[in-house]
Length: 81
Image (cartoon, rainbow, N blue to C red; front, side, top):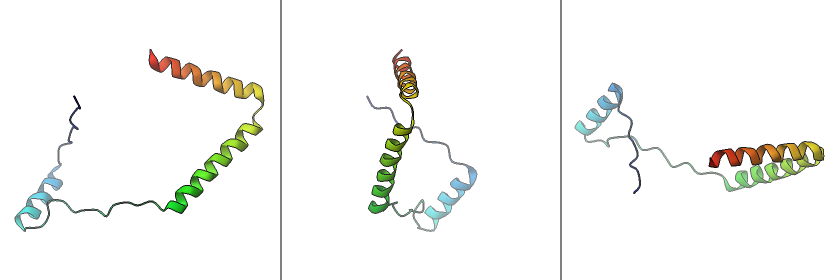
């Protein structure tokens, strides 16, 4: 069974705004325009992240990479306990 999302209580100003909006026939809450991401910017960010990860991995000596991998494995195993 899915849990219900817990709503936070309104403060006095939000409650007053809602009451005035309902009384004047306006909408209860102002609607914000939906946020859209620029597809080109998303792709550029992803490409930069992939390139920088590869460059970072090449710069790190094998011993240090092994230490990082072991720490990650330990962290994953601790989460499951």
